[in-house]
Image (tube, rainbow, N blue to C red; front, side):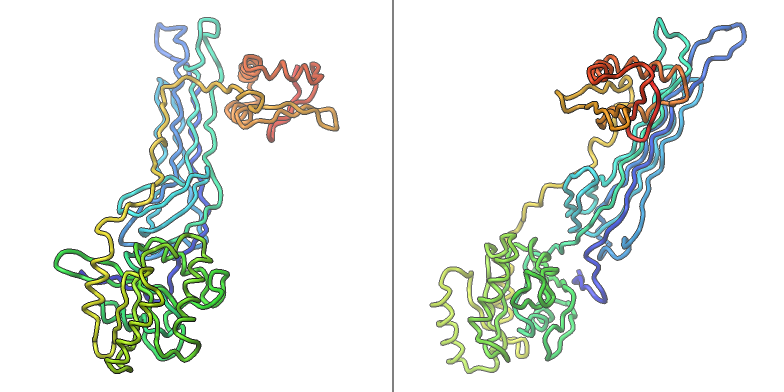
Length: 438
């Protein structure tokens, strides 16, 4: 299996506008058959709107295809006569790479790690009921139906965090890219100046028994957690790693090796996501510049300083290959065989039981709705459930208005209006609707 290498520009962020499809309207229809003078209502229900869905696609590399785009799912089809139900709108599926995180329009956290996993960003609206639904022994020929409701909509930010088993960290020019190119088949840019690596690079260590994905994270400097240098943009990519491989240069062009080591550790802790708690393997790079005796003394000094806080201390040379097999074996040995995947938001619950009767909006305690008298004397009714109820019906249909008034009376809104001083003929406001109520 070839290793995965990120080249060119890595788009690990995207902001998109998503909109679930509106529900289809219910139909107003009556049977028209020969010799059946009073066939009764037979208007069908509208279909639910489609949702905007993320799907984990391992063939995707980054979020570049999603930059500054709008995504709208198909609306539900309207109901028809003869009790024909409108078709459900098609979901709009957006493929994203493994490691994608987001927050849906309704606030649910999404974390896609496995191929084929899906999560709903914006749910579609409900389809409206046809006039058949409103037929009763008293109301035998209802000439009104429900409108479909709007789907969820809003801006959503997506973030990609690379899925790697182990992360190579260290100051710029510590030798991480050279090390990755020797341990895996990755081909990162290697040069003798800092910040050679501007994007995270993935490579795969292969053994007869398993594969381990190793990520070269761009060099960190003091203040990276606050955005200095390449900043915390790339610290996020280390969060999914099961362990860290900390590369330290023993003869750096700037600073002392131990101070440089502690500077990187401080940035991990400042990132405040628990990175400093990950198991760490210390790698002393460019060992070919030292004699074996000097190198052995260096390992002893670092062991006295760090003790059991690291998994091990391994000197290596990317130039000569010294220590590379030992390092590869250690990485494979210390990376767990299985890392528990984070909880994933799924698309369960998108389908709503279509056979349920028309929705009943009841207040939850005193917080379900409220009535307020505005400065000009009009009365405003607040509450999401009430606003949805008004969205459902045609305000120009007298029968629909009569039904709506009955519903408001049943759930107590009319009583609250009277307590607030409402009199017949006063203006009522609900959301964007304004009307006089008699």
